[in-house]
Length: 226
Image 1: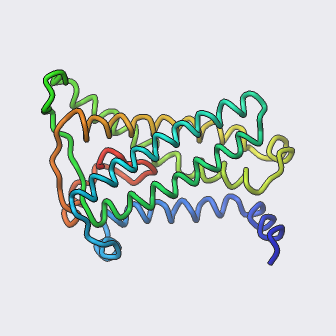
Image 2: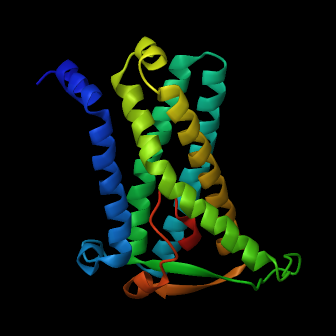
């Protein structure tokens, strides 16, 4: 089957492909928390490896913030090819994120925030923990919401010409929603990562107990349990 035929088939089934990939993504992230058989597919990791993966995930997501921001800037200035390259790179970074995140959670464990710090300059005000939880909740909701719209925008972008995207698809509207939700989710994820791994203390639970610590549904960027 030629590349053109594959692209045409994907173009005709963009919605169905989005639904399928969304289910796969949710299933994979949910599986590392809730399905022991799926967790068993990943090797057991040391605490040091888990911490290293957490830092790598934060680095990947930080780079994604940059590429998304550039993509947004370029499309607003009419630089379509640069925009497409930036958004394709951002999507590739999602796959890198998943490649790091799934084994970290399934074979390693999770962290929970503790309002204590080894640094005297870090504030310990009572409202910080509720603020952390609010950021975490927004981060999770946006992570969940952004999955299908990001996938749909990417699939439209890969299967349609520039003219088709402008005149025949909702790519511009969907892309704006996708980029906004995705970008804010990533920013909040990096902030909670910094709080959890650097500014404040945390407790650690090994992978076999991870399912009991699940605070909400799966998403693209669950750095709060890094």
